[in-house]
Length: 172
Length: 131
Image (cartoon, rainbow over all chains, first blue to last red; front, top):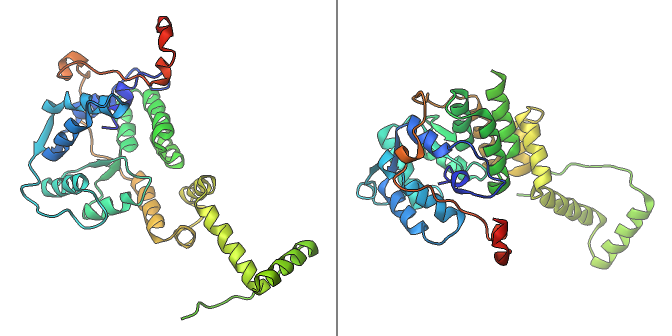
C-alpha cells in the first residue's frame, strides 16, 4: 500500500511522473495472502491518504495472485509479527519466493521478519526494489530519488540507509 | 552477581564538583553514585535522540564503528537489525521482467486512479477559486 501512496498523493510535495506500484506489479509476479486483500477493503472509505492508496491497490487486484493462507495455518508465526505479516511470510516460505518486500526496516520488526523468512536472503526493502527498478530503466532514477525523499519525510525512512542504497546503485 | 567495576579518574571544574557534592549530600548518596546516575541518564537520553541515532547509523554504515560498539550502545536487537540491513545493501534483488513500456493507467488499473489532497490544501474552503 505504501507504493500506492505517492501515486494517489495529490499534494505538491509528492513525487510525480511515474508509478512505483504499476512498475512493481508489471515487472514481478506478486503473490499476496487473500487476507491482505480483505484488509484493503476495510481500509477504504475513510477519505484519508491511506484509504485512497488502498483503493488504488484494490484496482490492481487482477494483477495480484492471491492465496488462501489462513486455511492452511492455524497460528501466527513466532516473533512479534501481526497476523497479516505472518501470513505473508508463511506464503513466501511456502512458495519459496525469491523476494519478500518490506518497508518496515526502521524497527526491530525487520529483524523478526528476516528471521521468520528462514534466513534465505530474500528480504528486500521497498527502496531497494525501487533502486533496482531504476537501474533497469523501469522507473526514472530522478523519480526514485524523489520518492525516497518523500518516504523519508512521510514515513521516516532511515536516511543514512537510503543514501547508502542510492550510492550503491548510482556508482555502477 | 554485581557487574565488574572500572576505576575512572578525571579532572572536572571545581565549581561543578562542589555543586555535585552539595547535591549528593542533600540526597544522601555518594558522589560516585550521583555521577553514575547522571551518566546513565545522559546515555539513556542520547540513545533515544534521533540526531544521535542517525550519527551512529552513519558511523556503522561507513564502517567507522563495529557491531560490538552498536550493540553496547543500542542493544542486541537494534544492532542485529542494522547488521542485517547493512548486509542487504550488498545483495541484489531478483531481476524484474523488463518490458518495453509500462501499460497506461487505463490498461493497468481497474477503475480510476484516486487522487487525495490534504485538508490543509483545501483549508480555505471559501477560496475554492484558487484550485
